[in-house]
Image (cartoon, rainbow, N blue to C red; front, side, top):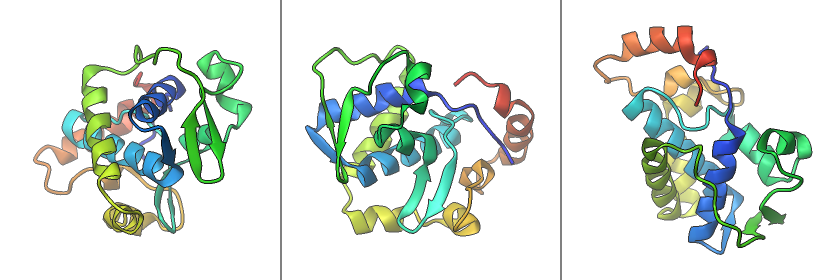
Length: 176
C-alpha cells in the first residue's frame, strides 16, 4: 500500500481556512472536503495535500488524523506548535475560535487550488449527496477498513502504472 506522512500543519491551515469562509461547518463537510482535495491533488499533481490515513466508514471516507484534530485530540498539538486548536467542536459542528491570521505557509498554491476544489464541491452538496459522491470504487474496495491511495488514482490516468510505482517507492519519504 502507498503511504504518506501526514501533514498536521497543512491540515490546521486548511481547516482554519475553511472556517474563515463559513462561520460554522459540520464535521462531514470538512472531512469530505479534505478527501476531495486529497483525491484531486493526487490525480492532478501525483501527490495528496494532507497524506491522511483514510478509513472507509458508513458515510464515506474519513481522514483519521484530521478527524482526531477536529475532535480536539491533544496528540497533534506538539506537531503544530500550539497549546490548543484554533477551533472548537460543539456536537457535529466546528467553529473557529480565534480571529488570528490564518497560517497558510505550509500549503502550496497547488494545495490551495485542490483545497478550494474540495471545499467548493463538499459545500455544494447535501449530506446525502456528499455521502453518495464519496462511495466510489476506492471506498467500496476498502469498506469497512483502510482505504488505499492506489484506488484513489483514476483508473484511466495514462501514466497510472508509473505513478503507482513512483509513489510506492517514494510515498513515505515525500514531504507534503
